[in-house]
Image (cartoon, rainbow, N blue to C red; front, top):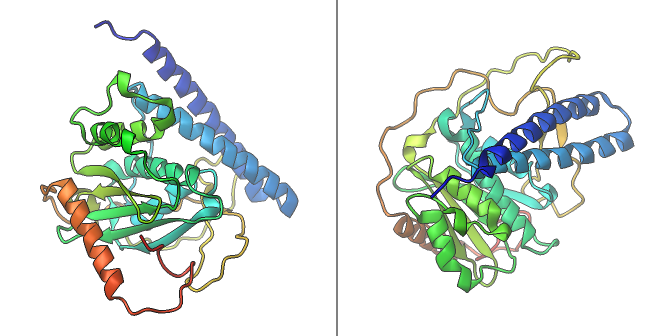
Length: 323
C-alpha cells in the first residue's frame, strides 16, 4: 500500500504552526508577566490560553502524522506538576479539582508524553460533562509500585457501541490504524499513539456510576522515581530575550474551601518543573500484570475504602465525587 503523500506535508505544516505558536506564547507571556493593569492582564491571558491550545493541536497533528516531536529540555517531573501542566492546556481549567497526588515523579524519558496523554483525557472529561460539574484528577500508588492517575467526570458517559473500538484503539499492540481515526475521538487517538511508545503505560476508560466516565492512566514502576528536591534560587530579573521562562500555575483550591469564582492562573518567570539533575529511577522492574485486572482491582479497592470510611457531611470541594 503506497504511503500517503500528504502525511509529511501535514507534519511540516504542523511544525510551522508549532514554531509560530511557541513564539506567540513567549511574547504574550512576557507581556502578561510585565503587565500591571488587571483588566489588560485578563485579556492577555485569554489570548495566551487560546494560543496554548492551538500549540497543543499542532503537537497532536505531529503525533498523528508520525513525525518526531522532540522536547528540547526533557525533565523529571513530579506527578503534581504533571497533573497541573495537563490541566493548564484544556479550555475550562477552572472546573478541575485536584485530589490526592502520590509524592512520586515521572522519568524524563516519558514525562512529556504522560503530560500529553493526561491532557487529552482531561480534555475529554471537560468537553463531555456539564459546565456545573467538576472534573477530578487524582494519582494513587498501586500494590505493584505503579501509579494510576484517575480522571473522573459526571458527564454523558460512554456510548456502549463505541466500547469495542475504544478497546482496540487503546489496547491494540500497534496503536490506531489510519482507517480507525475518528474526528470525534482524535484526542484518544493521540493518547493511544503516545501510550504505545512506552510498554508500561496503559489507558483505560470505564463507566462511572451513576453517570460519567473514569479515565485511568497507568504509569509503570519503571517510569517512576522519587520527586527531586529543588533548592529555591533567586529569580533573575526578566530580560527581553529570555526563553521558556514563563509558565502557567493553576490556582490551588484548599480542602474545605467552598465553591467560589476562582482566580486566574498566574504567570511565573520559571518552569514549574525542577532544574536539578534527575535522580536514577527507583526501580527497573517492568509492570507485568494484566492492565484490565489491575484496573478492576484498583477500582474495587477504592470503592471498598469509600464504603468503610465514616460518614460525614459532604463537601464538594473536600472529597472525590462518589462513583
